[in-house]
Image (tube, rainbow, N blue to C red; front, top):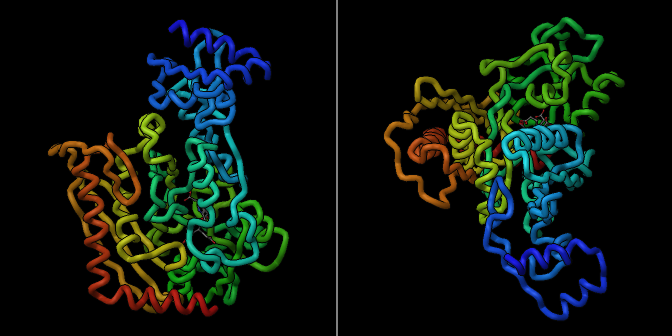
Length: 411
Ligand code: DPM
């Protein structure tokens, strides 16, 4: 204890001389007791090996007025306004649950943000938006990253896990009209009207349902897209996720929310996910309180379905899920690019938390770690997704998806 107090005092002296002296003498302190009131640092050792580590990591810490050392939780985010809003939202939740925690937000741009002139489905798989953030996680530059769950691949790179899936916003897609078309719907828009979307999933379903409309790629973050819609005459309307529009405060621009009969949603759409280092037990435990059980189960089923179909963001795959009276139902579909060919099936399973299975440590379901959600329900949800995918595969889903992929690559 004496050692710790002494070292902490020295650390508070921002003097290079003393720092160098300490380094020369290889002073190492390994405090045993709890360092903060809200959680314990289990990996405290390396922190105190060298005073510079206070700033450089592996974990960053600050000292408060009482001399308590608190770990700073650094939250990584993309720079887009939506990403910032989503990260701030999670930060607020954490701040309410853990008032003593020091949070810091680190914003960075990703390759996906920089390539704005190419359709999302053509520049490859989802990791475009997540790779740099994962690199920062790996290097301990950040401790957690907030994503839209639908942007996270169904298989995460080794060493990472989704530590929290928050309560889902509306998972549906919405129509945003060019102001001159105010009052119209997809149905009543004139023949040949151009609808902007880069989602093969949206285009496939809507082409089939509204054959009088034309579909054109549109890229960029939400702000860019709305600007492209409003300031030019290129698009009669664009299709965006209702959740993103709501988070941006643009609900008033939604003229129509598309139900499953018009357009089923993407896997994980509308849910926020917190990605963490799989071995960082402190952070995992901290963020696990953000899990929303029903959303976790629905998204596990959806992700298992997509994973079994070997689908990424460049395939037209859509889902619809529901939990009612402990029954989880999943509808899943695959489409050809023009929507002419499609397969759609539904299945359900019981996710009764009653017959509790021992919660095994280190168990992930399609990348999600949720110790506080009944394991048996997670197992059932994952199996539901796989079973439904297998049913579609037995009816020829792979042929439809392979052709769609090839045609999209050749576009
Ligand atoms: C993925 C897709 C899109 C995003 C493909 C799809 C839409 C691309 C487009 C996988 N990620 O949905 O079929 O429209 O060109 C994205 C958005 C959100 C997360 C924006 C949106 C916000 C909603 C959410 C982009 N990722 O879909 O309008 O948090 O689910």
